[in-house]
Image 1 (cartoon, protein in one colour):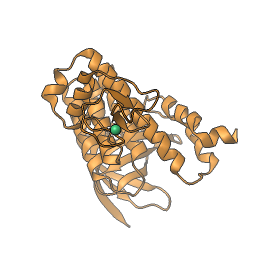
Image 2 (tube, helix red, strand yellow):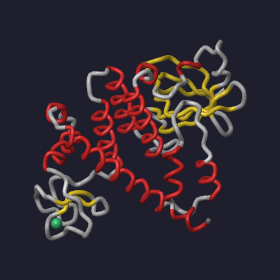
Image 3 (cartoon, protein in one colour):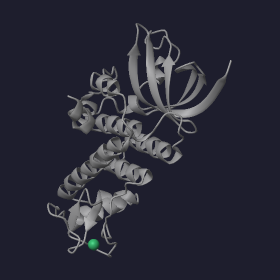
Image 4 (tube, protein in one colour):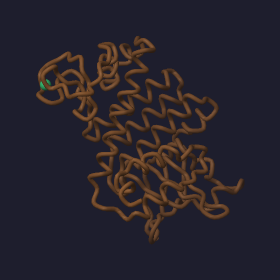
Length: 275
Ligand SMILES: [Zn+2]
């Protein structure tokens, strides 16, 4: 029986029949894995509680024909369960898991992203840092790993040393006065300083930031991520339309809304063209 073992974070859980679940995990060595957890929804299940979003586990799989099967788990940290009672921390954890799922592919190792996810969830569980800052630090560093790091100190177009007052998502971040496209925004210098601190995990600077700068940085980081995710989708070869159909009728049983997935499906130009 072909077995393999890995460390993993549970990103998402789907119901399958009466008692089983399909679990999406980000593993340390095998990238994203979708596997079946048999009987995990029964109260007598030995490992059901460990197959919840945000759980960090040591897991053994049996290689299946289509989906692998979870045969054994040991908890390394029940991060999801530890933040479940706190709305801000839970929504941050859910956003981290969802972004990690969208940035990884099945069977393609993504060690740096895996380490970022584990670190961010552990920090949320410890509760020592502001959940919004933990999320934004994760998102901006995850984008850096994905090759989408926003330009902050140099001009995104010509590379001129800043600081630059203008910021333009499609241009790639900060832009100098000469390169500034129409429609550029003008974030405060404190916002840019905060984003630099989040990217380099400089928590002293990040935690000293004002609420306005945090709000503005969050907006820019979310917009930058969304723009790059959309662009990545568009650059994929034509995918079977059925993929989009099933994604927009997604039902998760882990308490997370599928709204974001649905919204991005609607923004997908392939869907717009087909409907
Ligand atoms: Zn420039």
